[in-house]
Image (cartoon, rainbow, N blue to C red; front, top):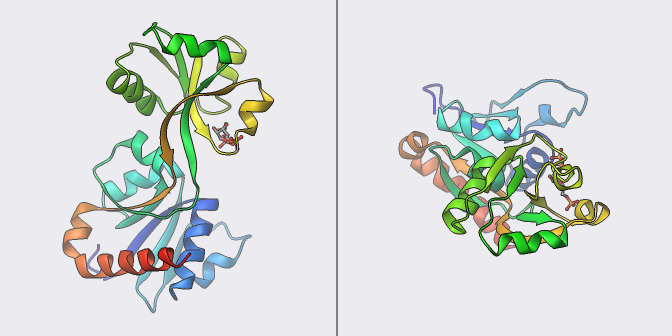
Length: 217
Ligand code: PRP
């Protein structure tokens, strides 16, 4: 929260930002400027309600919120867990539902039972490490990839992967399956701890209104 009285939101670019704005609009919080699909603008302001929105890459949202560049952020739980920043997670927005899973060819299920030192490819090395080391007590080698992680077992880079599963069709089309579920995922609202203290009424008021709205859905 800056001294100018604006509340600033960092939204994960794309579907998350669109869904968030749909929700806000139902509460009478809108930002006309954001409707122009051809615009390359990154910051949008609602002068009347003293709100500012900016669009960031999903994994950067917790960083903006931790440093207070944004008071509030919306990001996937996958990103929030992976980035592990000092932010408060205040609300499950209910959209973007999917699961973080350990996946691989059916034969790899055996490797998960005997604490073997296997290779795990993932775009989420921290989540993968935490799952294997702290929950399964299995020492593994984590290999960080930046996308198309399903390739890992297909080209024998890794035994399994830790990745997001939504419909399951990427796995199916590549002869892979879910072997274990790490955790459920969805879009979450996060808040900077200082903003929460300084602007308690305003932020809690907003969170409560969104919570009420979500209940009616
Ligand atoms: C995500 C995820 C899986 C896929 C899962 O990838 O990493 O690959 O979607 O969806 P499904 O279960 O509905 O098939 P994304 O499309 O974001 O691209 P990426 O592989 O480059 O991360």
